[in-house]
Length: 458
Image 1: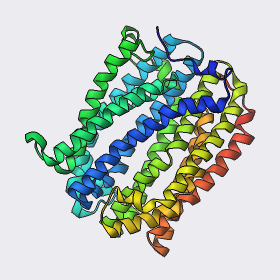
Image 2 (image 1 turned 60 degrees about the vertical axis):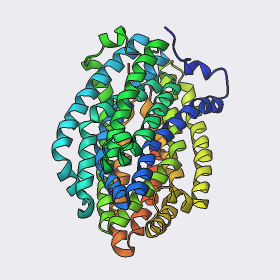
Image 3 (image 1 turned 180 degrees about the vertical axis):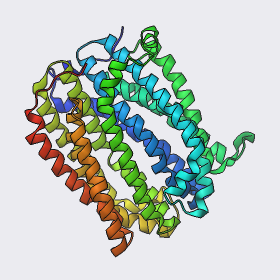
Image 4 (image 1 turned 45 degrees about the horizontal axis):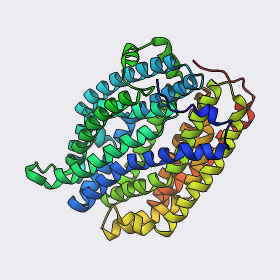
């Protein structure tokens, strides 16, 4: 079987920062392309249809994020176990973990499709979606939720490929997806070649088409490359729920999923505060989120890379590398994210202008972006420390710290300050929460986690 190079062996042959950068290149590009799909849709909707179309999609984001949170948490648990198994060169265990994760993820996707299809409207009313965009937001959201099994399979597949040290294949998959979306979304908005004009739902249908075609491409590509994650007989033999493996995955996944779910609830609460300022504020919220998503990609990619490297080091019994992985990751996160933060401040109006044309929305979004942008340096360091601890199976306390920082600090501060100084107060709450989160994660890392005896989970 042909496999990607074992990254744990690379640790001994080259400086760790070079290994990080080799791994990070495709990882960052993959994350950029993943967001680019949503960004392109936002640009098409905002410029080809109008601000209300952009607000409709932006208003649905916290609801979608709520359901995707389950997959992110579960994918995180599966990736950690696959990383440890691959670090130990146990390819049979890699297949068993992947089979269980994909089986369980399919079941969760079907449940979300049924629930989301039935209750899309009440969910959007719950987050206070403005009346003038409620109908289009419901129509868009229901389509995406019904298609969630496809999205979940796509996400889990790309997550777990990184666990075996492969960041190139997820990049290829996302290039295919973005190209399909780039063609399909405007085609369905304007009805090219006799296609129906689908308005706001064009982005949803384009997403479905991109997932179907990309998953089909992955099946062929992975089998041809004899990839460790290829859907071959060995994987199909394990395509059922191994309850012992599932229990171990859930030990990591449940706190992570709970963290993501509660954070999505917090984001929905924040969106409700924002919606109270009108649809222009909702559009500005979506625009700021789009810009910030690119600014934080390097730090999030570094955190994911550090977690995978740490898992492989643990699987290979190379515990001495964990401290070096953490330190190198923090340096790279500060450097790479810092460059983008500077660019964001210097060219904020230009960046925001890619998404909307309304001068009032541009002015508001720029003001809010300037308040919060610097704090994503802090957030990146916090994510990295938590990611390294997660690679060892230590998830409960880091997740609890993140949850408390958002629910116990960000949301109350946003509520109080929005009432006192207006919408700017909502964005001040982000850096307040991020600074508190980093302080608590670092304290736990230094005083508790570093003193633990770390062992393989599988």
